Structures are given as structure tokens and as C-alpha cells.
Length: 109
Image 1 (cartoon, rainbow, N blue to C red):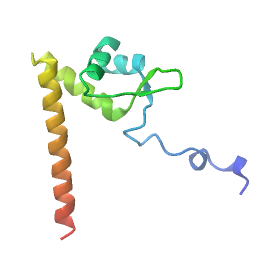
Image 2: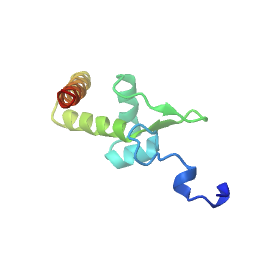
Image 3: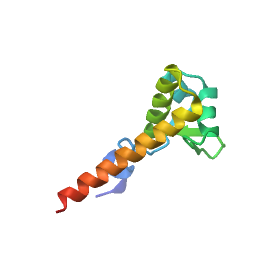
Image 4: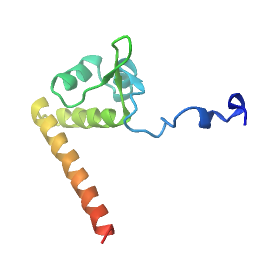
């Protein structure tokens, strides 16, 4: 088949389902979360999320990172400090990963 006539889904890697693909600019991410770009920068400084950079140096966020940022916002709204919120989120993420690994290992028995 002529490459020019292939369906678009065959030409472009399927990034729409990739939770780690940095698809969102800082402005769009802040808008989606109902926060400010400064809030996202503070999460970067706290090392909770490390956005990728575009060729021009602009921060780009993935859906996974936006979920972490939304959870941080929830915890901050509950009165938890940024440092404590970041630690809670990291521990929650590690627990989920361990539970998933455990479930996969049980299926392999």
C-alpha cells in the first residue's frame, strides 16, 4: 500500500492512549486543573512531577502528571502542606504499583 494512502492511525504512533506522553502545555494543564502555572512550577520544584521540555524549553505535561497534580491540589485544599502532600502522593503511587505487581504475580501462579 502507498504510504501516503495509509490511514492516519498507521502513520502516527498511538499517543492518545499513552498516559506518559507530554501532550499538555503548562497553560492548558493549569486551565484543566483550575490552578495557576505557578502551582505546577511548585510541584516541579518539590520534585513531585518533572515535566518534559519542548524544543523551545516549554514545560509539557502528561495525563499521568496531571492526575498527580490534581491529587496534590486536593490534599492542599484539605490543609496539608505541599511537602506532606507530595510524600503522600508518592506513597500512594508506590502502593498502587506494588498492588498491581502483586496481582500480576498471583495471576502467574
